[in-house]
Amino acid sequence: MLMHLSEDLRGYAYDIFVTKFDAWLVFGILAQVVFGARFVFQWLASEKAGRSVMPLSFWFLSIAGGLMTLVYGLVRREPVIIFGQLLSTGIYLRNVALILKERRRKPGADAAS
Image (cartoon, rainbow, N blue to C red):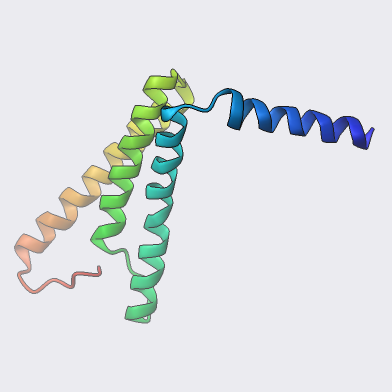
């Protein structure tokens, strides 16, 4: 049974990463790397500030990674990715708009907030 499971997993991984390998797979993985990088930026900004903060770079990486993932979903015709990224990217854009609106009202706003 374990051997059969091992063979099935090996076949599954081969199908995903070898059979379906193309430039769009590389693009999709890059999209996930960009999207995941936002957590590293948020963590580093929080460590620097000594408190939990959401730097503007977090939102820009969210938008970039979200749009890249949306393009990937559209090309691959993945409705779950398309719906998820359409909604999420809209929320990211709205957060940036609110942050920039607040900064225009407060000229000395903290860059890491």
